[in-house]
Length: 425
Image 1 (cartoon, rainbow, N blue to C red):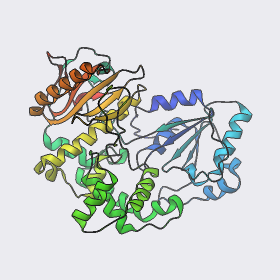
Image 2 (image 1 turned 45 degrees about the horizontal axis):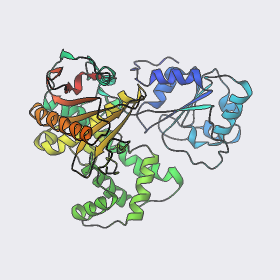
Image 3 (image 1 turned 30 degrees about the vertical axis):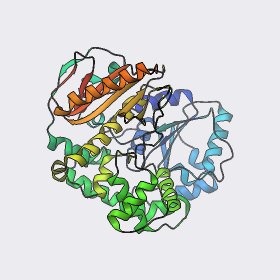
Image 4 (image 1 turned 90 degrees about the vertical axis):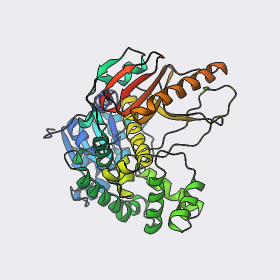
């Protein structure tokens, strides 16, 4: 279907591949990240179970009673927010089995569906794709002169790039990667994101499973998660943080329940710990690194403007790290790689680990300012040496991803230095 001013996504290639391989493709991700636009770009007809204002359309009622009517149309057929009528899953699976055709349906969903009413897994018939907000390369804010794949392949890099200043980077963090906000100022984008969060609390959390949750406590949890963006804070630390900053107490069971709900709405995108035979003796910590799906959410919750970030370098560093790791996930997944973080009980930490599909891995530190490059490179080299001495599998590539720098290059010690505004998949 023709979409005016559609900005192509890196994941478009995967959607095309899955349409070739499977009878149906499921695109999941947070609301407002562009799932419907991406689905429309690849579809030839559509059924929208919700209107553009977010209200239920008459097609939702039809889908629950007569799914075959919703499924009827030129293929590939987009069915938007399919999870609101879970009976569609088995109906589509049966149709895929009956026809034996591939690329028939594109399903988009902004929450994990209730499994009630779904009798078959869909294995072999459905391909699932996760869509995040836009990376800087997709939004046009990175020149893309350096490929992450080339870096992970160990290719030589020496390219000049336009130097970003702190104000520009702060605006990118606050604005976020939401497709509909790309032409907004960071201030206007933040106003929209605040309303986005409010509507999720007021409506989507209840629609998820029909459970009434305490909105005040949800807000307390969101504020604590925002304060702990890009950290490995445990649930106990979150409880202590809420007590310290807001003088209120929430029990561990409630925290876990609320986090699970936020995860089902795809608002949380934590980094798993990397521990696959990296070290043979030293114990590796198993805590996840906390992230919202986009750093702009943390900024909106904490009312952090671009100017406030610049005035608070420590907080800016955590938010910048979150933006970079969002981009790295998007780039890595396009080449069948996966992002982790690394932390052991000897005090060693690596901001981002990319595990390649051949089992090799690459280690990246993320630094806002150029003055931090030297210490970051030294730290990476020391960790690599320790792993080698411990007879573990060392990283194939070392790199420092930086904010304020005007060139991508490889140092004499072999460590890459890359501006985030030069990176692509």
